[in-house]
Amino acid sequence: MMRETHCTRAAWHLTHSRPEMLVDYFNPWTPMSRQVSMLTHRFSVVAALCEQVGADDELVVLRNALAFHLLRAATWWRIDFAAPRVAGMPTTRFMAHIHAHIDRVAEDESLFDVLTWQHHMRRGDMSHVMVLGTDPLCRGGTSILYGLDGQRRFRFALREDGAGRGVAWDATAHGDFVSTCLDARARHSMVETRNEALGEWEDARIEHARAAKYHMLHFRQDTSRPVIDRYIEVLGEMTRCRSRFGRFEFGNILNHIAFLLVRAAHERQVSVASVLREGTAQPINLRVANSIKKRARAYVAHGVDPLLQDGLDTMLDSVVSGYSLSGQVQESE
Image 1 (cartoon, rainbow, N blue to C red):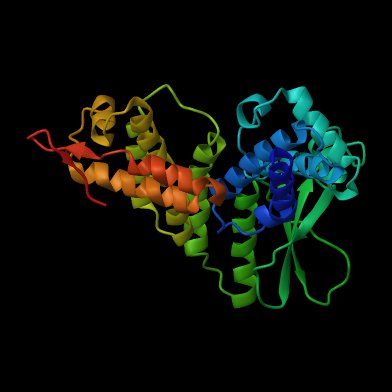
Image 2 (tube, rainbow, N blue to C red):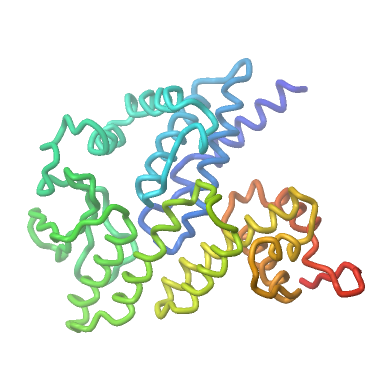
């Protein structure tokens, strides 16, 4: 029976946990947290299956591919990454999985080389750019090309359809892909509309720059201050956003922090309001606690691996929002 269960789970993951099904690198509107959650969780499950007796070669190949894409995703969105904390294994072992993957996949080996030793390009040369792909969402007669230069920074180039093969990379460079994507789409909009006004694109770029520091700490627990202080800070950031993309990004960050608050209440077996009161001198009422719990539910619905949702929904169900003056449990959804 255990062998049959192992084979069934392995077959499912071989079909449904391939990196290309989990990550959409070129679409900034796909929540980063959801994609990272899927890569992290599927890697841990597949790695555990590989430790069992009779793991086949395909499963090992999948594990190695997931390891590579977990590192690529951290680079793509500029997230602080440490294998012991994120992947649950020593760095040397995690990197061995990545090396096994790039030995098989030449394109990924080239990208890994740019990020590390740079044997295949002019080391540190920002004029030497590896092409990553084209923007699948842009419209019109001009395409957007993305690349990574010798200084390990993301770049873009606009190319008119039907033009020659030469590529003129824009001089702007960023440490994360989304910043470059927003720059590229702003420039693309100007070219296609002949409109010099950046409008919402400029707001989106400024707001993403503020959001980037929160993305960097996605895998890390900030113990220097109460979580509620971060929640209030991010809520203020989202309120100030003028672009749709800024509100989208900060909304996702806020949902994640709300989830951390509710999870803390679950682990300590207290109400959400109790956790909030301990963390801030500001007045906390039931409406605030309920709002945080709803945002935590939104995070589970849109920000984590679907395979984890049932268990996390059950956890959220077990946490109450707060208490009335009479001491009776009060909660609304």
